Length: 169
Image (cartoon, rainbow, N blue to C red; front, side, top):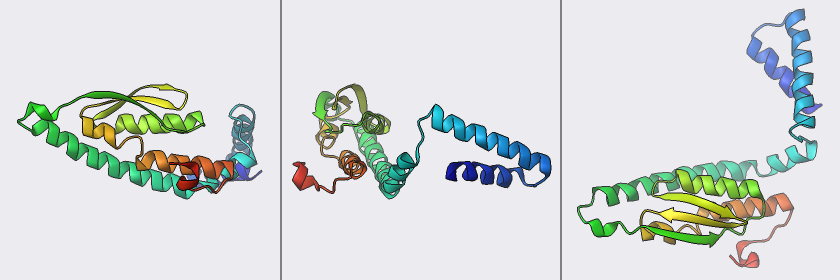
């Protein structure tokens, strides 16, 4: 019901005027979108609560990702502009992210890929195969803040309050 009201409020807000035909069409459209979300997308109230539970962590993850992208841009720029070819030491490595949820593994793989100098080649279970432009780029990936933040989100979604030390990170 809350989702229906949210869609209806959005419809009325974006429409800019409230008339009988706009409100009636908004009711029908909001009901259709809500029904689609429940039946096709598997939306549920519990799922929304879980997403809201990690909302702050998602924002922190996004901020951490931006910082990592800036740092990787500077490091990649240094490698590219360096007159020494010895700075380029490409490496392919595998590491276990220890993430169980496939969408969190995908988020991590995409985050690695959009970070300059690294590219996720494949995912096998929780093990990611990554190509790094330089050996030093590969060293920080397994224990990176991005991976640790996603592990914390997964624990929060599972309802466990374990810390990294308890899990063995």
